Structures are given as C-alpha cells and as structure tokens.
Image (cartoon, helix red, strand yellow):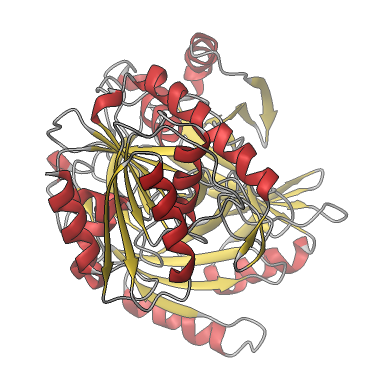
Length: 513
C-alpha cells in the first residue's frame, strides 16, 4: 500500500521559463538534473525540498519547443502545493509582482486556494494547509514561514470517477474523505490528497507539453511495491511494468479511466550520487547510457538558474537552440539538420569539431511529410522550387536577425549542414551571396533547377560526398556552380554512403583549423 504522494511528473516545452517559475517564483529547489530514463536525450528536472524527500517532488520532462498537449480526461488536471494558511496574502502579492495572473482566493474542502498557471499553462494551486514540511528549503527571497511546504495533492480528470476512486482505494490504500460538487476527495496515509473530478463529457487528454504525464504514489520499500504488483497482476485489464529509475524503483499502471499512475519506492533517494548540499548542481546521464554521455550532455537543452548568466532567447522566424561551452573562442557554428532530424542532432558532431565554439542549431520548417525538413520535395530527386526560394530567403533573413539578437560575429560564423540541411545551405549561397561565407556541406546535392549567377568570391566551402551515396550523382552540379561563382571549394569523396562517419569529423575539424 502507499504512504502518500511521491511525485508528480509533467511536461514542459521551455526549460528556462520552467526553471524561472518553479525555482525563481515558487522558490523550490532544483534537486536533480538528468537525462531521461526512457529517452536519455530528453532532459528530466526534479524540484523539491532541501533533501528531495518524497512528497515534495515535482518533476518535468523537457520537450524543448515540442508540440503542445491538451488537458482532458484520463490525466492529472491540476497540482496543489501546501503553504501556511496565513501565507495567501504573501503569494497573492508575489504573483502580482511577477506579473502572474492569480485566481481566487476561493475555498475548497475547507481550505483557501489560490490558482496560478505556470508558463506552459499547467494549473498550480497554492493551498493553505496544516500539512507540515518534510525538510524545508530556504529560497533567498521567500521568508521561511511563507515557503512551499510540500505537495498537497493532485486532481485527476476521470470519465469514470467511481471506478477511478475504487481502483485507488483497492490497490493504493486511499480512502474517501469528502465530496464537493463533481469532485470526490481521496486521502492518503500521509494526509495528502487525490481529488477525482467527474469529467464525463469532457474531451480526452492529448499527450504533449503543458500537461501532466503521471502522478506517483509512495511505497516504503520493494516488498510493498511487489505486493501491489501482485495484486494488480490479477487484473487482466491493468497491465503493469516495473523500472529501475536509479533514485527509486517504479511500478506503472493505468487506472480504469486511463490516467497513468506510478508507485515509487522511497529509496535509495537522490543523494546516492551527490551530497544534499549540492543536489541539482550536476547533469547526470542514466547508467545504461554512459557510453553516450558526451553526446547526450551536448544535446540536452541548457538553462540557467535565476540570477546566473544566461542566453536570452529571441522570437525569430526559425526554432533554434544554443549550446555554449564552458570556455568559448568567440566562434559560432550554425547547424542545419538532415531530413527527419532536429536542431540538436548535429551538436555532438560540431562539439567534437570545434570544442570552444558556440553552437546554434536551427530547425527546418517543412513538416508536410510528418518529419522535419527544410523545404518540400516532390520526389526523392525533385524539389519544390518556389518553396526552396522562400525558405532560403527566410533563412537568409534569420542569419541577419540572429547576428543582431545574439551579438554574433559574422566573420567567426561557420554553417554546417547535413543532407537536406546542406542542400538548403547550397541554395542560400547561390540565391543570397554573402549571407553564408563559410560552409561545411555534408552529403549535399543541387536542388535548384537552374543555378543563378552568383558572386561567391571570398566564400570558403568544404563539401564531403559519400562514394556509395545513392544521391551522389546530383552533387557535381552543385560543386560546379560553387566553383563557377568563385568560391574557394575543397571537395572530397569518402568511403561512405549517405550516413555520416568519423571521416566527416576529421575532414571538418582539419578544414576549420
């Protein structure tokens, strides 16, 4: 049986705004940063009290610039945090100061509630409650008496509230304590609550950013978790799976109305790999992914804690992401991914090529095929000419905007494209001479039906083709157009197909030097 709520996991699309809200505004402690245990290239952040004790933890999967979800039945619809009942005025004034809209206060189940929304639109309730803190964290600008104490509860939206309530009671030991309107309140042994709202007639939830992934309940040890697993195994309609999450062991199951529930052990806890004094300072990679640790840490989105230096992202016409090294030489590599890739795909390669360069990964905008590309194609070797010209012009504009927005030095910018990204770069160079003057083109082809006359004097280009690349026959036309324009072109054919190899890294690193 469970002894309370362990954590709640949600999904965010903007890591910096998320950190600013949960650390900067709410005053929680960032207690762990790690690659995800299902997908190590997905950042997972944990917020909580001083020692990351169960019952205080709010965690976020970071889908940076990912698709938005929709809250609906079969999901957690709200999270609630406990504060001192006398602290509502402090938080109302603080919300106004941070220019956050607050709803309330109102009374729910005899408690005063202030409703806020985080940057992703997730409802966060601050609830005046007598629940004590486990191990309080003292944020710099929040008096101890007003600090967030712990999780007060969550609200589940259910089309079958009776079945959801019965499932939680039977397998997790919660009991009904009250009912208000369409909401039934269940209480755990620790005193925190799960409210079941009758969502009959609501639309179903859709996974994505701005919604909850699951709520986790506490199990004191593995023996208790296995006991619950055995009980659930007797229900054919409730398949379960168990995973080692390093800091706890998790049992997952969906209740009858579809909400994902987790049972998580209290131990071993978050201090197994860093002391309580420095919780949250380091970025960890799951043990099974240690061989890829360099690549994973390069791919994961960077952020800063409130008050620390940071990249201030600007709203430009292409989704983009920066990765800055600990020491920089002032150069920047702009990365254009291949078909089906994204803005972070080429960052590990680029970081090995130029360890001290800032990396600016850019995301293509064509999604017609259900994957990211830079322009529409009509077949494998035929391309939408109008779309190429439109996107090339838009990218040329993006370059100028990025230089101004982020203080980049044009003379120290190199553009690296792979496959479809290299194809767009070649088109940009021919259609907008002077915008890209130093380029690394990996597996490029000519995509323009007719190459325009372009003055490329002063431009340097490295072009690397694969000997067995099925598209290689389209590369010589691009090579000829670049040479005719006066570009200083260094072209190579290596023993490879369309995929990237170690030889690409070696050629690119030597060429940059």
